[in-house]
Image 1 (cartoon, helix red, strand yellow):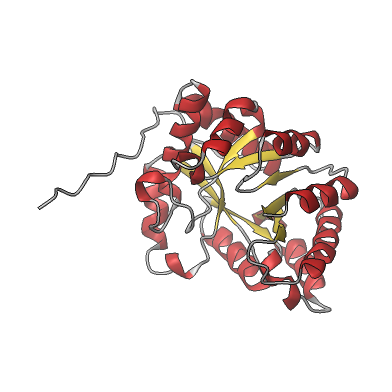
Image 2 (image 1 turned 90 degrees about the vertical axis):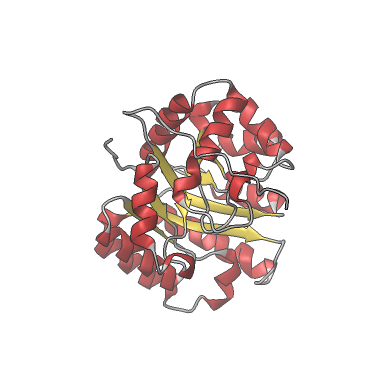
Length: 277
């Protein structure tokens, strides 16, 4: 019988260093049975804070509740492009109200944007609501978290038209080339690197990581999706973030501690909160 190949251990950070998972979906059903264990495991692996991302009204409320319950969680609110056809006349007012009453737990607006790969919502509706939500994020003085899948041209065009963004933003789960990365950075946005950077077919993303400055990078799990290479296809979680950080470190020929220090600083500066070791 062929011996099962053991997965490499999760890279270990030196004491005094920590990572922040800038994008995870902790309210999803994948985590409902063992969230406490997941968060404890994350902390043990040096991931000291997680931003739980709102993708519709219900998940935005759920993310805020998690942030109220757990000190290591922050929340965002917003309507994902898949769900924009469900927006009703009161949706944005209810999100405004949520931000108004729970501001201390809410650090960003999103994820919002365009998705032409799945097209669960009509692209014309996606573009209209994307513009509306960018304006709302500016009104609420929150950084934006952008979803862009197979929609680079339209996403960039709308962002350029809607700018400037005083509170900046991030291109979540970046999937473009270095040209797009440079255009995004010109807007004052950060580039968020998911576990895809560890994949054998992640060459384009690896090249982007090599070329753009560490000051413009943050990292994310996008859990429960996109687990890094050793766990590819399995449920992702924040504890696996060091795999991504380690790959970024190798690509930039620096230590994982340097990646942890700078990306954590970048997250805290963008989303305006502080994490202590």
